[in-house]
Image (cartoon, rainbow, N blue to C red):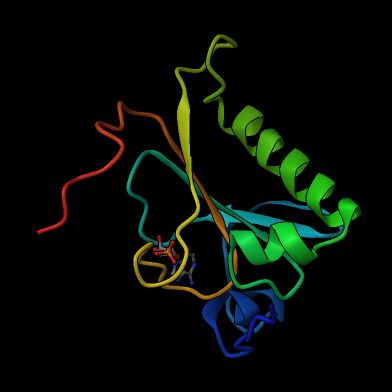
Length: 127
Ligand code: AMP
């Protein structure tokens, strides 16, 4: 299956340096930055630098090196933000929205890392 990637999406523009971001961590294949509208005291977005639209695209088409770099960067974000449970932190939640039913706003794969408060039930029933 082929995935159509829209080069004009806001995270593509961040990666091109066209708009600013609050970077927490940058590696050869991955960027982690603070969400502009945080929904918890810790709300970081982890994105691959490659052109992947969502999780299943990334998981299918990214190289092993990109996947390892992305996963290790996400783990490092958990460490840096102090949310790691059992290691001084009190836990966190990762979310990757995809497509219409996943209510994905930005069509560049990103992992939300949320923490710093009790996050409540996993899902709220849709209206
Ligand atoms: P999603 O609904 O999973 O696509 O989430 C997109 C996220 O990107 C939302 O939490 C937004 O607050 C966040 N966001 C949108 N624009 C920016 C930006 N310029 N810098 C940082 N976060 C952003």
